[in-house]
Length: 583
Image (cartoon, rainbow, N blue to C red):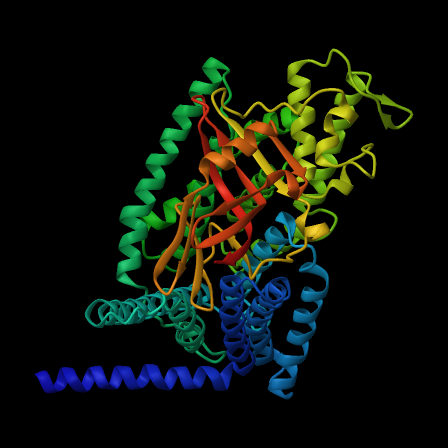
């Protein structure tokens, strides 16, 4: 018995290893880009630790490589489906290289919130495309079984990769504990990257079905069947009843909910659409599945209508933002899918991932993207508020007088919205406008309705990045912040402990340990930073620490935090420049 189990285990391991090799043969471009992405992320982390190198360049390359890696999978699928008479490497690598280069060139510059959301949207669309790119040009029946196969492969990949990483982590921990090896914690991260982008990526690729695989007679998973029919569908039914009762309460009381309900309805609807997709193969043999497929889309329509009314009221009051845009767009997609289910009895479910990936792309790129629609909406609100308060004269803003607190809050929030994204998109504001010009331009201080009355927030940075400074008379220069590893040179180590405690050590001996909280709080207090952000000269926020061992000039680069009701300061971010002399 033991021999049989050993043989089976050995055979399974052999099969998995062979599968990894076959992945490289079938997806060489994807495998290469996966390894490249891993190398870039390791390089980026090393640069972050050392505080050196062109980190922005590596970040841009990593983002473009991730896009190319996922795109190459779908490109290979398309090649297998229709283009297999041409050279495989060329047909996959050429368009992948073009897409990777174009993304790097046009969508990784000036990294900000918008670029981050665009990257996330592109990643989502490309991941979804993996589930249909092989079939959309070479349609076959049993598409649901094909998708289930991919999900099964993904589940096994996560399971195996998770076990492997846990084992490696346990080995490192044991070596550190038993032999005082002091293996750097960064190696946990590096082994995670290797596990993900070498073992995990190749294993997942090996699980992707091939074009000629047939799923006509594929058995439907009993576990999935029980999960969907006897757990998920009853839960959805109960949830539906709760929503109907809640919306009945709204109709009686005329008190409309806040945005949370829209999100709850939306994600519940998306899950329901996924359930209908997965139960399609058993509609003829299972009465419960058929009833759910027939009636749930109809039952959901009134709930979606209430959701649209709810989010519509928020948009009417506060305008469109990216979050509301995504809720509305995804809601429209769910509505379209449910109407499709109602009108087409034997439709092709491949329409679900295809349309969802299109929605993901449209929402973050082009003229109808969340950013353009939101910017247009907020500018409309901005114009209306300025005109209401007689602050708009000949297309220019004049400082307002007697502006109500509510309008001050709304104007402030709109300006901050554009400050966090792209200030060039806001209308009427002077081209030279900066954060500190708000009162001069609008005639009142920035006012927010989301600050708690007991807490004041602040942010400060200095002129260092633009003006530089002299380092004459000092032996060492260090850049430190609260999220970096300790910096070392010539056996001298500098670190920030517990956010604000500066520690200098040489050969394991502490030369200086100083808590900077009081000095930093005094700087914030002297510059009246409560509920504000400021840029001030480096001379105003530098000081010297000295003892018998060392002299350190501390120059503040950046800090942020909050002032509590008891006048104590809590620091969330701290970045310093240290000029150091050993005595």
